Image (spheres, rainbow, N blue to C red):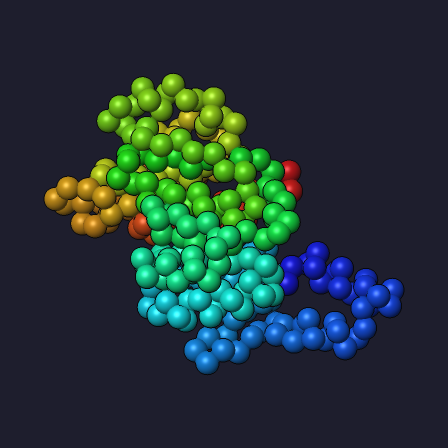
Length: 252
């Protein structure tokens, strides 16, 4: 239940086109819907600007489907992240219209009509290497589902810095940048020194030997010499996208 839907329902009750009983039925599960194994939060969108997102690991495919059914019934939409193969299959069967991104491990049912763009401008997802694409694509899907215009700039890491320099215009046109990198984690510092827009750095667990599962990239980004670079946790494309969406909704 978002603010537009709630306002429309209240106006319909005030006009007499919807009865109080019918309105109560539509609000029956608001703000929280109790399932056997979960409490689905239908108030989240009013509080934070986007409905609850389903994190799939640790849940059975049947549990994920049930939660997504509750979200879809209330809002016409859902977003599931880190979905495994069996969960993807069951969601695809239950919701044939949902978009499955196997690289990002996401399943997204877009509302009808589609959610309008709410951001001030494009969110640019920048990826250092092809190996970072699962995290970058998770960020792209989540940012798009949260109502942002999303642009992509992939495989422009510092090992071939000319690839990034050739796309300076794309960097300059972005309102928020999400920069995803593993290995030495240097790309966010480079981008942060080239733009004035907010830069959100995402370390990935990609790397050889002493990368320590992304800890090396995380520490490099936390110690960035480019002022104002923000850093999220290792492989956390979702968190970066959620932060970018909040920044992008701020008034000019």
